[in-house]
Length: 369
Image 1 (cartoon, rainbow, N blue to C red):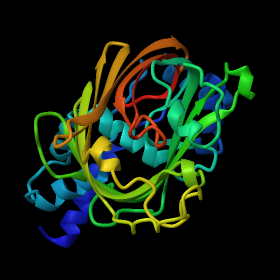
Image 2 (cartoon, rainbow, N blue to C red):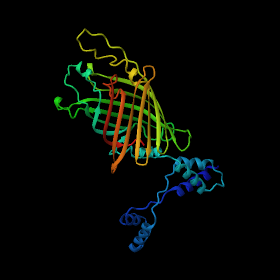
Image 3 (cartoon, rainbow, N blue to C red):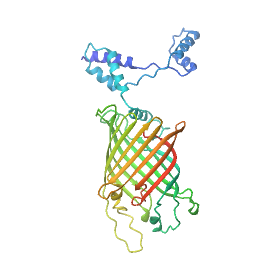
Image 4 (cartoon, helix red, strand yellow):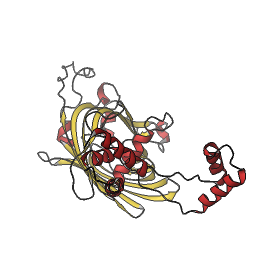
């Protein structure tokens, strides 16, 4: 197709694809129309037009991908009709699922300084019950007051883009993510209700949708580096660094992702005299993979207004790992209730080699789907 014909056809396609805006109130409509009306237009005519527009049924046309429109125009014959090209992209847009819509919504707000984009689940569990608090590790550090089984648990997880605009493919980006998870002995007044454990998990990753067509779903790939530690010193210090890849698939009401990782090696700690604290440099937990495994499988399923989430990790050589199940349900507005059950090793860094079960109830601040 000739360049001039292509430009003309693409312009026609974009014009046909542009949705007509409809003001939410009569006053908003009048304000908009005054800026577009001829200089000799009367207020009566402006009001009449707005009243007519307000009476029309509200429409929410599908947002069309300009890349799709450009591709259709480039490959179209000279006799192709602009309306046919728009229709083809509308059908493609309607087949896009809720997960892609969420990605698009996140991209639309990434540059807003007043918006924090969720990364993993964000939740607060004011009450949870742990059947096996890891008292031994604290006793070795001289803390002899027993830990309560009841405590609060919370997780805050956000991400920010480090790149703007497409890099290697459409809608890809580099992100910095940060996840904080805390365990608060809020009901333990004997030891002044401290935060028992807080884990810090910064990461940098590249994310991109994958050009794989499977049903109505979408594939997503991710590759990254992350550090996770509890920020403690010597006896209580736990940390590790990982490189990972992730592959996920999301349909309208469910999603699943697998994330294998490779632990970046660290030097062994130097030996210290008996009774002395361990050396500050070196691997705090050389056997952590025996308990945490080499991969994590996550999933989510939405049934009407209830959403179920799951996590599974395993080391098949040691038969150790963990699983977590969550359920969310509506409360009011955007606030949702959240129930969580955990069973296994590594709920926190300090508990990487301690097996426990926990059940908690609270509030979810951001959904998986």
